Length: 137
Image (cartoon, rainbow, N blue to C red; front, top):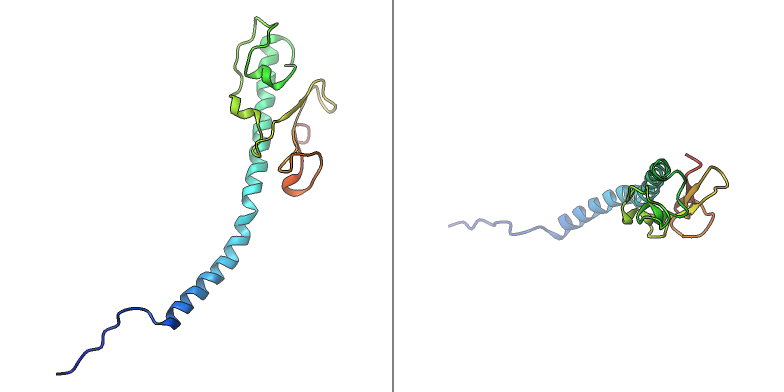
């Protein structure tokens, strides 16, 4: 009677070839994905700043003046009976890096300025650390 040799697993060479192929795929795909998170955060910050600007405009239509600070969009200011908010959710007060949005009224560039200092939380910077503001878009 002949014995039939059956294959019970993968050889070492087959495993090395598979690992090499996975490594090649990872070396092509991973560098393209690394920067996408920061681009998404910057895009989210721009969208949130636009939403805050719309909320400020709504506040202005109701109260007759821009808010003194962004908190007025969430909680009624003490001196206003025509406040019809909240105009935004409390979660919108911070940028995607969990730093508070900056608001300046009167603004230096427009009637009011809204801005984020980006990933590093300090003025200036490039790339993910670049400032994002309401007057440049």
